[in-house]
Length: 186
Image (cartoon, rainbow, N blue to C red; front, side):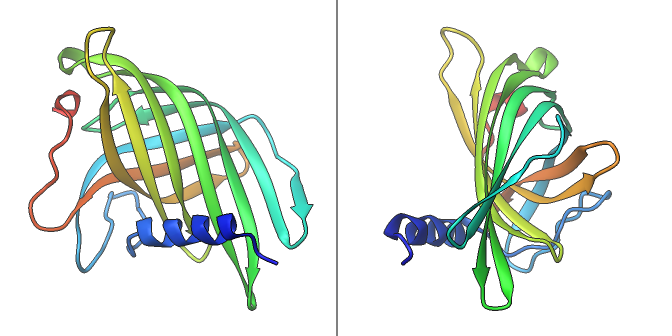
């Protein structure tokens, strides 16, 4: 029997996702209804392979990354630690993959500001080429500054198994007029 929390979690993930194509080296994220502005690329470094744990019909694996960089026109910095959890649920002859991530680090945008960052992401993964992940990014520029929150859409992760690393492009998504970015993004 499927738990109500599982159904709600998957329902929220479906609601939060925007159907869009995968990211490429040109930072193109094709879509028919939304405008997307490229913000930055995250480069993850993983500590090694993680085991897959099975509970009933759900399989899960947890990846911890030992470091990561953020580089782009809107944000530059590093991620000191974090983890990504993938849950694999059979659905007909396919598998639905639900991903959750959390990471912590610092950013340095020069004269625009610097400080700490915390990010939480959730989304659905399609290994045929699409991933829609909504990221909530919290930036703290010091004791007297307010926390700044922004929702960001991150596209497909490109894995490199030889170097145990991955890259992911992130975008601001909007329909019509652009959503305002926090001042630190410039």
